[in-house]
Length: 328
Ligand code: SF4
Image 1 (cartoon, rainbow, N blue to C red):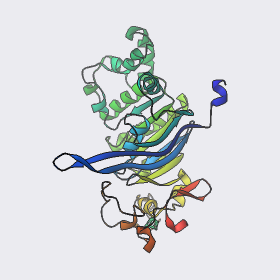
Image 2: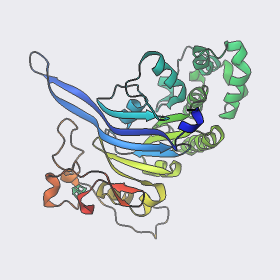
Image 3: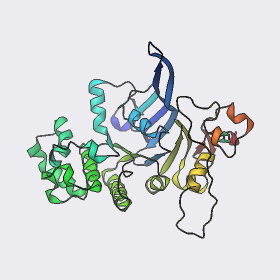
Image 4: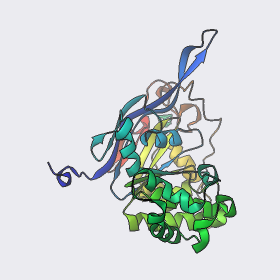
């Protein structure tokens, strides 16, 4: 079979992915439970699309991203990349995979080596993968730095000599250096000033088209995710509770949690007075999640059986899935 014939519409398929962390207690530090950071999530990314993964801090979205990239070992489930099962990949197989999946981190400063010049930071992954020496790669790296909007002399400077937005541009250039197929951007603008956030988001959008990238865009801010994404998945307490086309999700959210998140987005037009849904209580601990629907202690539409039955993610409209007993 040629490579062409196995090319499916989906670049990435995640099936019932779990990432649990053991909780230990007592004198012998025995395992007494699990923190279910990611609990049974399934999603697919089509080639060239941006899938936004959104939810409050601690909902498991970053853990999901890192587990998909195989920075963490999954506790259960399956991850398929270009149809190949990468769930158990190790050694050279995992190393090859890193070439195709790259990450842009939230804190660009922490992810860049402060002792290296920017030219070396960006060429390092290419050198590691045998694509040439630093001097041979220099012209290409300079071109890439220019493409992400950095000044010409950036090659010879150190990360501390740049602003936050520029550092994130360096992080993006480094992620692009290996010409990956998938980029996982984990809160790429949340550490930046609001004034530079949209510049970095627009840059990511342009580069996605130019490099034909598929993007998994993780953020807590729904308006940022809306700006970027073709489809959106909403996470709550380690669970994926709604997945839909971006437009559809904003116009007609089905899950009460998504409805509350969307109602909290400030409206640019003050005449547009949609009622804000205020959620009571805090997000429960993933170590001790509620029975039944994980959202039931805070849900404004809770029903008596919501605390007993855990809803599954099901199609409620065409290409629109939600995990809520209101639709069963
Ligand atoms: Fe609310 Fe019940 Fe739906 Fe959960 S299943 S979101 S508690 S209505």
